[in-house]
Length: 145
Image 1 (cartoon, rainbow, N blue to C red):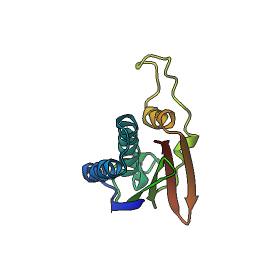
Image 2 (image 1 turned 30 degrees about the horizontal axis):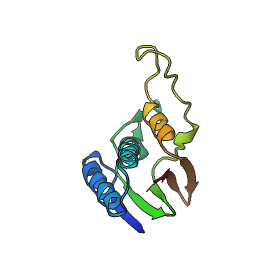
Image 3 (image 1 turned 120 degrees about the horizontal axis):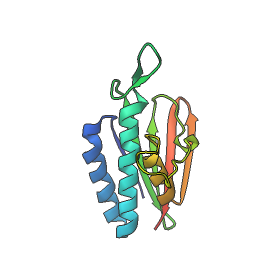
Image 4 (image 1 turned 90 degrees about the horizontal axis):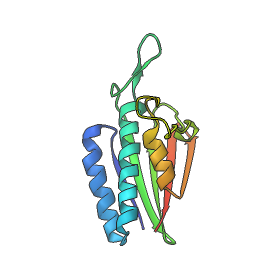
């Protein structure tokens, strides 16, 4: 089974993307735990793409979230007891796997801002790959069912 959802990379499309994921996972009989983990991963990655993939920078080079627009796609493939969730966008090249994991032993006040979402995704998925190919960011998450 293979299904693709495409939309503008805007936060207001998150609910539609989530409904697409939930409907597809229900069709393949995905368990509750894996379904929740995939839903959380979808939200984290989708929000990051919507906020930053097409963002503009100010004169000092600082990223201004939510200032650009572009397309993204989400492809779900279910085969051999695994679900692959692939996100593609043509935004700013960014490999989230290179982001240093936050020190979760520190208190919230001591911890640097950012990185917790992708950390949670890394911990909940069985495999994650990233590539930038033909001007596209391609992030694939794999979860065993």
